[in-house]
Length: 232
Image (tube, rainbow, N blue to C red; front, side):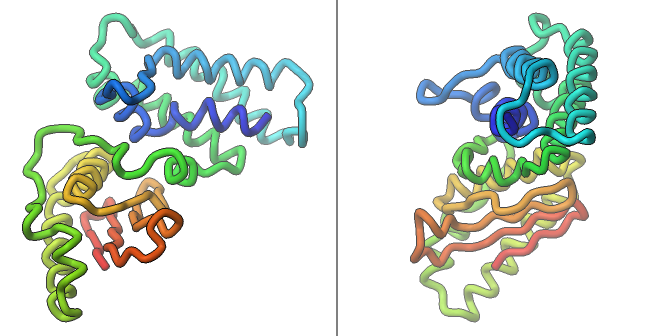
């Protein structure tokens, strides 16, 4: 049952998923309606709360978290006029939708599931499409080839230069999640193979996927809400 809940709640809690499958989807993607994501989660919650669970039983705290999620989802959904709001505005600006996303992530945590782990498996950095028009990183300066071919001292300087640029963008932004998604999308667009290794409200860590690129000597990027970046 927990796997069903994770499958339903993770897309509802993931900004990256919503960027790819709701806002910026292409013909090759599985398009999802926001209301569809909510209805799917509500259906799974009702199923688990009203029927005998298959597999390990939920403890009292987990059931309480699910019941709270079910109740609050209904209240948030009632406050959103899905037919009267643009998808991009809903995902990025609507306070009730933000509350839904936070609630889904919180409920996953109560179940012992990690949203960042789910995203790492289901969404490469290529899923973090460019969210808004923004100054793109210099392909010539920050391409993977530049980092791979540079001698160690020059690579260190290149990392420091990229750190400085990313830190400035983090400090100048009022929305950490959005600017972090924008940065990772731009890095992917320049050719870097980046996957989400860790994410919470304060920090994101992106690195090459050792499973698909075992010999890669790519960069790792840490982004901090405090306005600091680390590149290595």
